[in-house]
Image 1 (tube, one colour):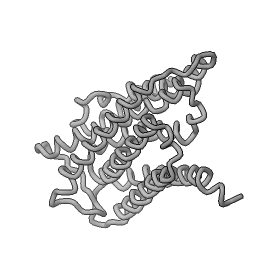
Image 2: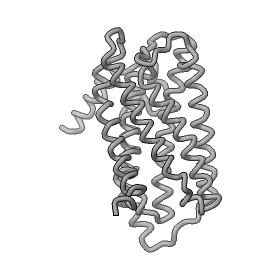
Image 3: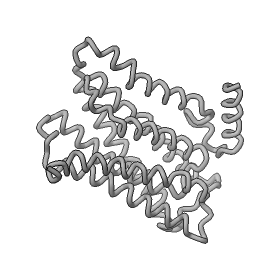
Image 4: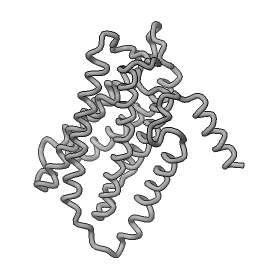
Amino acid sequence: MIAFSFYNLDKWINDHGDTRITQYWLMSSMWPVLLILIAYLYFVLKLGPSIMKNRKPFNIDRIVMIYNIVQVLYSTYLVKEAFRLYWFQNDYRFNCIEMDYSYTDISKDRIFVVWLYFISKVLDLLDTIFFVLRKKQNQVTFLHVYHHGMVLTFGWIFVKFYPGGQLALFGTINAFVHAIMYSYYFLTVLKPEYKKAWWKKYLTQLQLIQFVITAVNGFMALLAKDCSYPKSFLCFVLPQDIFMFFLFWNFYKKTYLKIKNI
């Protein structure tokens, strides 16, 4: 019965999703990304810690450094392409980025870059796996796991139904933040003393600013009368944006403001 319901759900998604994205990896069905999410949660929460319980941490610093460099280059490329395909175009409006359902070259490029952004969310899952393999289970927090799982899930839904449009702003800002964040992670592997850098807190502040900008932008699009971007989808994602802000704010408060509260 449950399998039949999931089959119907998958069929409904494919019937109502954007057919132009179906050709791309992981986009023809919900099952592959669902299995990736389940495998990720099972490994980082149960299997991985169990395997590493009586083992020494793996020395994978070089792998992590290469991974961070790839993330920086990947995110920088996404930002560059977002400006080329959205912000430098004449049809851009801050309070409303309409969906382009055409089959023009620029529309195809937009779909491809949006798909690349989703793939970056799959790549991000390695963050937690590296934590587990290095026996840094204290960093596998609810915020960390929920953030990665939520962005992967919402990213797939976003790309499947609306590959482009209003949420392109979130993707651009998020990729920019990731380019800076993974640059910092690279430095901490190269020189561990940077883990206690005085400017570390500004990275979290940057993430908080990200959620404020995207929430304000989402509400502006929601209230725009001349915007045809699906408002139902904005109502779907805005609560998550706000929830993530409070999760990150709670982390920032506990980590950087605890001294002031003593």
